[in-house]
Length: 307
Image (cartoon, rainbow, N blue to C red; front, side, top):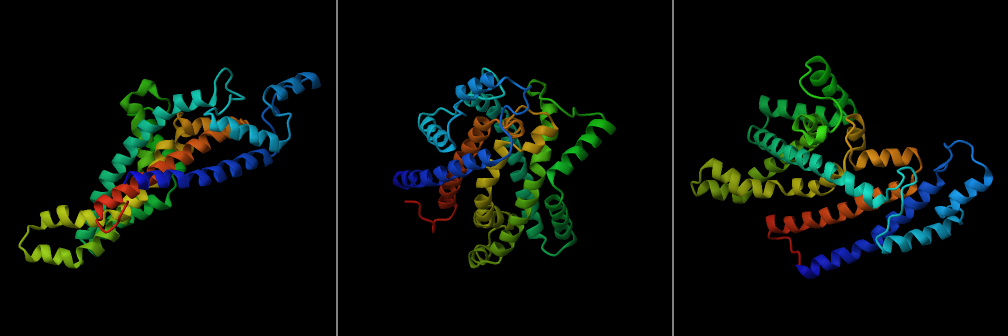
């Protein structure tokens, strides 16, 4: 297994290099620059600022300088958050995004798997149609619509939950962002679980387990779920990375100090190092989580070899 992990990590290096290259030149191709919104500066001062950040060099030289710094683990300074490096911002924002993401993905797994399994066991019943109807609604309504709706209901009309801010990590401030992040994932997981469980419940090994006289609860929990969760496990890799890294919309709406908010502000202000740092961090996180998913897949399905 160790050799498999090493091969996967080595094969991820070219992919990461391509992502960095595309993101770097796309950022530079966008109109505007990091200091265009500043008050008109004298040419000599502007030239000194550009020189201080190596922005006076040709783009290809900036690219090779950036690659060299990345290899040393240096993401560079932020252009807009003075006295902060990109590493400082990611270090400050990631724990918040991680906490929200872990809560959201755990809630999504718990509710989505339970709802999908129940729908599969009640296939073509009114409960099945009701659950899948809610799931389709959750998929169809984007979170930038659901988040303000939750804010309006629970924050404005009912006045039982705060609508913005982190509140020092208080549970009441986390609740609405976690629910808003989890709702789309609940819908996807419920549909994936339902489809896979319907197929698994009709498999030969399930008939064999029932023929042995096992209780239906044991058949479902010990046998059907193990095979029925395989598509869900595959989906959880990129889904977990997306949720943990933080939804830029959710963090902006609820004013959560996570990575997503830094990414949005960096993109608006043309803060190249911040945007690049978040993109690289996000890409690495996806690769690591996909590797973890493949390892878990091998545990759930003995037919899959990871050596």
